[in-house]
Length: 376
Image (cartoon, rainbow, N blue to C red; front, side):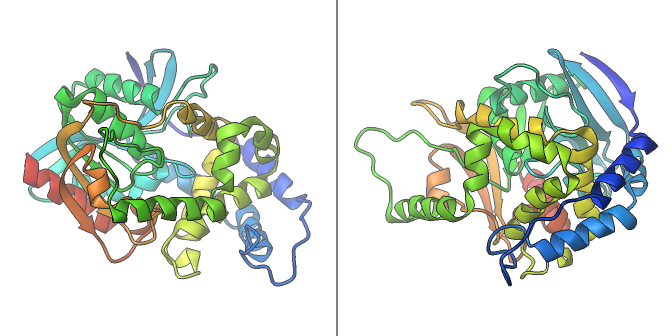
């Protein structure tokens, strides 16, 4: 494995091109008074794009990223971007934290000081960009699913000298981290999740039946997908068709991503009360400048062929913690998760949503720290 330092430096011409495209956006019509009922709210998207064009500074986001030690690792033909920050406490353990879609490694920035500084246990943080996201390379061949990425993560951690390490993840990152624990339990100290993969299916022995709570959860998922799952259906089946427009129009890209942030964030209808405008645009800008919206959504199609489905005898038998945020997507009852995960800590917090590391970094970091203090 080859590792080299990396510094973010988007060309000024790319920033000028973005502003020019925003200036020349051809805006769609909208049903009167639609708000968010038909999708991304036109009034808000226009306002956000105006701010993106005239006020937001990508250079400030760059400066934040470059504050930390960034690297590119070459693993099995992939170039994987990651941040590596060592803990300053009396005892530190290595922890790889994985993001999902439509987020990025930027989700984790506010947690870095919370997990690397302070007394007692801290963490050597490894925060990678999933293949096809951010500054990691775009897969050129089919098959780069969460299973494949989990293997890349294992090789990355070994290459950094960590024979034993911990894993944490939400959204797609939860699936990647779960595969990591399933395939390499001898190397995992513990697994911390704030999401259970939507494809998760435990093994059910013949004659075993779901409990009423588990049946109710299945219905909840079906209801959710009928109202909110259209994005997942197209990204799992025909992602390339979607890619043309979103790779060409920054306003279109913004609308596609921001609708999910609005729907999945615990903000009581005021998105920017939970996540700042600059944070939202930093994440969207990352997709724009790296042209990774097309490659990022391809993982939905790849994962549709490799769901997190457990066979007979398969079980994650290392300590697992789960923290549930109230505005998270449908979450299985503990009994259903325990069919395949060795849950030793289950926490329900009072506030926060799908983008927990951005919305409630202190709550998430504290649960991570407490869990690993209990098991190491």
